[in-house]
Amino acid sequence: MAVTGIVNIKNEKVGEVQLNDDLFCIEVKPYILHDIVKMQLANRRSGNACTKTRSEVHGSKAKPWRQKGTGRARSGSKRSPVWRGGGTVFGPKPRSYSMKVNKKVRKLGLKMALSTRFAENRLVVLDAFTLDEIKTKSFVSVMGTLNLDNALVVIPENNDKLEKSSRNAVGYKVIPTDGVNVYDVLLHKNLILLQPCIDQLEKRLLS
Image: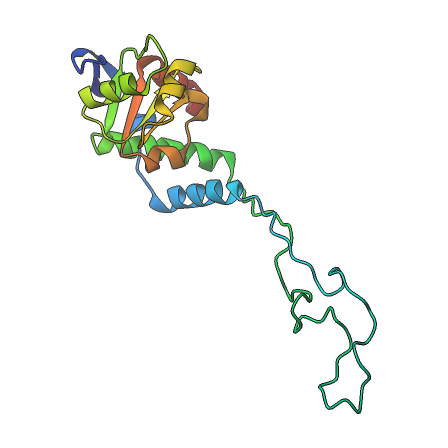
């Protein structure tokens, strides 16, 4: 098993923890990470764009002018796509952009993302992370002490003080273990795990 140090919010080493090789030391296959990130971004799209065809746009069905004798081009409807205010040809309609990736592959992708951060030496394990009040300055100060300018912070459970303190801090995000995903792990340069999160991730991904 791999071993990494545990630090406190003052960046002082307070111990060591063993990391499961099946979770943090597996072979990384970029195409799997690509598929999962592509799926996550696609599933975020709303697909609500909608245009009106010539049958849906408001307007009279009457012929604007007679067919012959006016000297103008023949026209049959004010709803024609070639007219200003007419319908749209082949315009977007509400649709779903969702993609599916097998559950086993999603689990494997998250293991690969965690392994990537550990291999790059960008994984930090904290013993605890608490704030006395909701204050962005306090959160940024801790990140400065840890020398991390861009990081995803994973906590065991929801913590309003930490989550709200990080909202206005550019480059940082705080999420509970249940919300850890491939996109967020790869989006941030560093990964911070609170020590209890390691056991939670093992139960989630190795069971």
